[in-house]
Image (cartoon, rainbow, N blue to C red):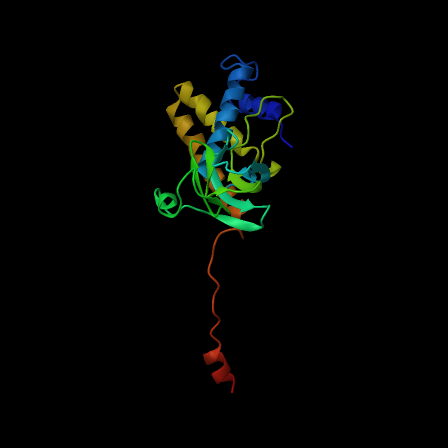
Length: 217
């Protein structure tokens, strides 16, 4: 594993700044974490960002809404663990109003919407309901020296290219920034396709064996 300390040292070394004459260790840490965030922001379906069973919300009777964890920026699915069924998202911004009267209708919730970082159920449950929420949330910044990035170790050095690009940008070396930034983008793209191989949606192919079977007869 490549630790936070290793990444800072490597970035400084490749910048020829091993004595931290240009940037301090704290500044290199900032560049490393900035590059880490850029990777996170490049795609919202990175496997390490999808959290399942990380948030079990318990709605008591007549409770319409509950807050999500503060780092959530997309909800993938909500499952009613108590009654064993999937709750569907609202079809548009007004669909919940067409079907239910908020704060009045109660029963088995079958519709949800996300508002102000909270989950709202329609209708409000008339019994205690536990929800399992699958959501997307970014990993926290690295801070301790032994911290490691959330993705596999073979891709950790991609962060260094991003950190170098940011360091060169602030140093006014536009050509070096562009060179390292392009390498960073290319490597992130390769990492994404390698990690998501087999997870992309696809349509099954129908094998047409009519002509081959006819020719063999």
